[in-house]
Image (cartoon, rainbow, N blue to C red):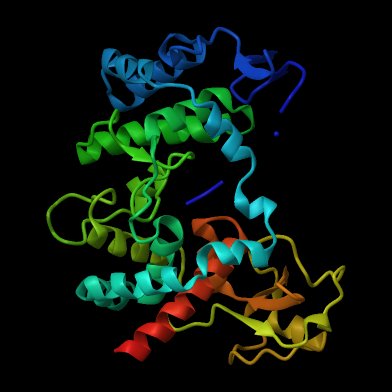
Length: 342
């Protein structure tokens, strides 16, 4: 589940003076070789210890072994969702091999997918598509130590230091609750983990033990991951059987500068607004259904789509309509091939 250089000193959200050293941002009092010895690190350790009963010596030992990763700072500044057009982004995920692997994944865990669909009302094809987009069905779980990733972003990435310090605290809580070694857990450059790439707070709130072994293990257990992705979607308001999005045949029905092409991911218009503007949705939605129109750059021409509440739920997983479209198209492709081969 996913997420600019500076040249002068400024204050980060925690009130720590920051300044440029050799072209990189550092915090006053921070030893780049040991976050636990920094002023910010000591404050973090004290707060987590006071609030959640950790031993300070143990937190100091763990955080003292976290290593700054400059590659992570570079990666988080240029995510694909912000640098690619739709037709470029689409090619990463909607490929024959990806679709065949997804069908094989569905066939390998049929009981888990059927149970998740029945218990949570979330399409098994959406669940599989999420896992496919995130980790290629568990093949690419991430090679960064999560501790390194979160510490680097918590203490050396001022634009989102508050968020990542909170996630670092959630990570220590999660590893304690699941009896994981915080020095061993690996994930993405942003600290996301397991088959579904849950960040630490999402892991704590939405991960479930779906196979009954009393551990919610998203790192190595695909069954727990399947149930947890379904739980995440259900808890965010997924509507069983409701439409997700539909392409409008006349891409020129809305001018590129139209106020009906809203910027926020959450639908702020209704289907009635778009029908009044001349669009003809065919998904069987009512006039008062919340909707959002998006214009995507296809391979040859622009594509106009109407997206609905379920599409918004997909973007709660990753705040990007390109991501949402990739999940939707992959799920449709998985459904088509899976039903054809059944």
